[in-house]
Length: 91
Image (cartoon, rainbow, N blue to C red; front, side, top):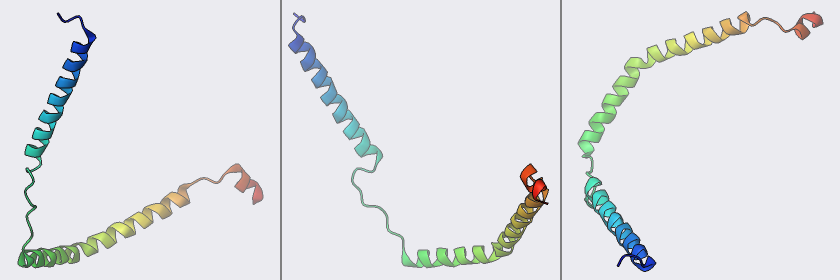
């Protein structure tokens, strides 16, 4: 009964179609089913932008200190690099 290769091919295609339909249904359910994304209210956007500005101003001195320390580290690393034999011969 199941010896024909046509049955096997038909079964493979049927299960592939079934898997594709299940995948489409799962994707539709997971990603919102076509609902429109929520829109931000203008007053909320304004308040969040003001809060972001305050946060950036509050942390700007820390950012400058981090940059200065990074530059100091780079200068110390450059001073600590031993000279190569070629540089020593040139002196």
